[in-house]
Structures are given as structure tokens and as C-alpha cells.
Image (cartoon, rainbow, N blue to C red; front, side, top):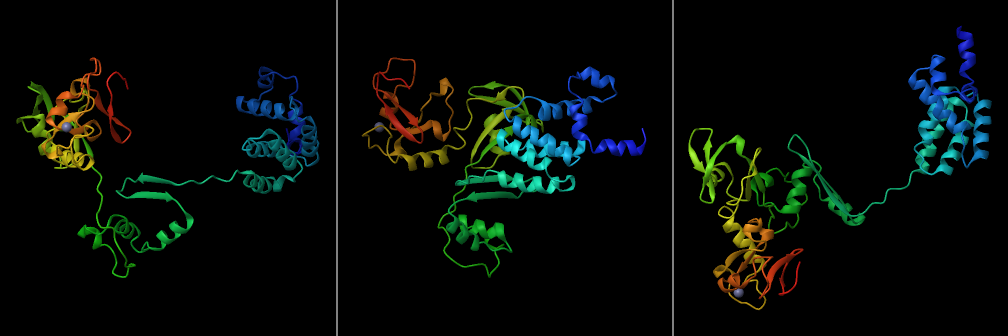
Length: 349
Ligand SMILES: [Zn+2]
């Protein structure tokens, strides 16, 4: 086929599509079309000559495409835009408009229309944190426009991260405050800096192997050859605050001794802040004379973490119905959302 013939065919995209009527996929392939071409032609044929509730618009589109001598690639381009329009009627309106547009303007017109059809995003209050591989993180907060504008103005553009943190968390850390330029906006800073309690995970394989159980702990042979308990391993390997889970790739979490003896002082403080006295309704024994109580019992898989702990006096710790399967007599304490509640006898969770 000569070039002249090829160029003549180019402007007859819609007629080429029409010719596919009644031709099966194998028939088209037999004529030399690639699988990709066949799929595309069949798709275009279904749109311009297949059944649709919008036969009037379909006819308009075919006539316009023929009049403008749209090539197959222009028809493909048109579909790349119409498929972004979800509503069928709107998609047909766009198709008719683009078929009626001269080929070289199709792309520009389509982009404008698709932009216009886009449903405006519904913003709501939210906060997002993304951690980046280089140690930085991006905090995105959406809130009241005026407040956010005011907040944005307090950020020192020379040191945006450090000045923002100083505003949010206070400047008690010397390394943070030294990063803030002296001409950054002065003002009140929050009194205390809240720190997140970290839950560290210790991969046992990185430190040693479990030898055997010893009482309620495990014995671990460390990579240096020394044999120590799981408790000592955690103490050596980890910081002195936060909660630590030792996890084995083979055995999963190394169980039971878990956190109790490590974070107990911190947990005791936090629990006392929640309940200055025994948490049992009406009891006034001070928390510092109380005992840790597992809401979901230890032997039933309850963990020694804040969510599962409450401080009870000796007496109420004994009275609480620990076993969810035993007949309840005095009721038990449970955590409902963020609050400790007393669950009366003869009720189930
Ligand atoms: Zn009590």
C-alpha cells in the first residue's frame, strides 16, 4: 500500500470502525490485525455502532466524526477522555462534542471539559502523617480556614519543621530550641511536651536464640555466646521507657513475661492518673496501695498493657470475677472504649 493510500485511509477512522460490523475476532485477526488492534476496533465498534440508550447522540457522534475526518487515533484519544466521565449521558455529550471538534483541537477541548465535569473534592477536618525514608515526616492537617491561616503564619519559613514543633510541643528540648532562628515569631509555648509511649519490637533473631523456658521467662543465647533471660535481653537491648515485645520470626511473640516488669513503674503512674483510687465503684483505697489487675485475665491471653490494666485494692482484686466462663457473683471491671466500667453479675459482654 502506498503512502497516498495510507493517508487517504487515515481520515476515515469511523468508516474503518463501521466495517467491523459482523466480523468476528478470528475473522479480523485473519485479515492481519494484531490482538491489540482487534480489541481496540471491537471496543470502538461497540461504542459507535453497538446498542446504547442514547441512539440519537450516537448518530450525531458518527456523523460528526465522519465530517471531521477523525482518524482511528483521534477516536482513541476521544475515548481516553470520555471513559473518565462516569455518568453515561454526560459521557455521550462529551463524545458528541469531541467528534464535532476539529482533530487538532480535540485534546485541548477534552481537557477543559473533563476538568469542568470533575466533582469538587469534599474537604473535612483530618490529620495525616507520612514518614519519609530520610528521617523527615510530613504532617498534613486540615481544619478551620482562618485558624489554619493564623497557624501557618506562625511557622518560620527558614526552619518550618523546628519552628512548628516548638509551637506544638514546646521548646523544652535544647536541641530543638537551638534550631529556631532568633528572629522567629515570639510567643507563648505550651507548658509541657507530650511524648508518645513507644512500643518497640525486638526481633529475637537479631540478638539470639531461645534455648528453653525457665519459670515464666525464656533463656536466650545471645550472639556473643552469653546466656541471659528474656527480661535481661530486653533490658540490655532497649531503651528504659516504653513497652517492648520480643518477637520471633518462627514462634511469633515470645509470650507471657512480656511487659510487666519493664514498664511497670511507668504503667503504674499512668494508671494512677486514670484512677487515683481503686477503680472499683465506691472504693477509696489509694492507687499506690493497689495492685495491677488484668481486665482480660493473663491466662486468657490478656496482655500487660495499659488498655488491659486497672489498679484495684487487694480486696477488690480478689472479688473481681476474673474468669469470663465462671458464674459471676460480684461482677467485674471491663474497659468500654476509653473508660473502665463495672459490669454487674449475670451479664455478658
Ligand atoms: Zn477497692
